[in-house]
Length: 230
Image (cartoon, rainbow, N blue to C red; front, side, top):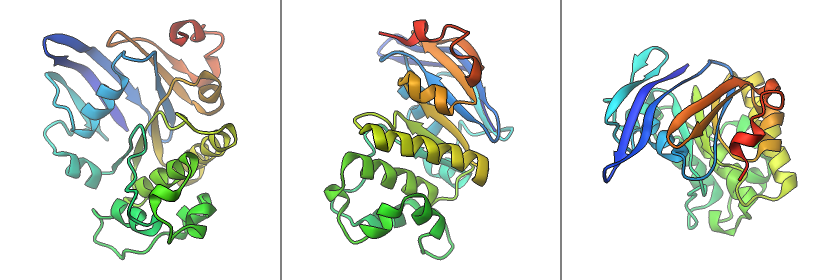
């Protein structure tokens, strides 16, 4: 589904991404993991076209997307749930969801599937986004991403600042999206216990480089905890 090939990026002379190469197989939940400051968020911004890359290529279903602006990448099937969620606090839940479907020419109705995944969004559809709790805002951010009917969803640390019971719900929802809806997911995450419950594949970054890759079921035997623990 997604292939990242020898990506390099610099900030003020600092080499942030160093020949980063990895693949997100179609129909998988792949986790990009690593300590703070290793380049994970920069990598997601490069995939979305927010940050230009110095060299390398990014392929979506075999097609290079590095020359596409961000809105074209969304139109081609990539959705992004940013760290911190970035919902619109003064728009209603319903309006926030509609923003996610802005790239579609189809009817501006909320698919029932989104409300089935997140019933609280239907219950609070007329409340402002800023009135929701952190966990509810995270569900809204994922629902908003689903509005564009994506093939691939990138989520940047969705468990940050979220209560444990909502983390569990989010994990179950992500697995359901992969297995039942056929959506491919790239998850940027540090919470190892959560990762082990949801990951089909894992990729580990350190100092802007990929240092390990493997199957999610083999995280413990591969000793990955030692690579990402603080």
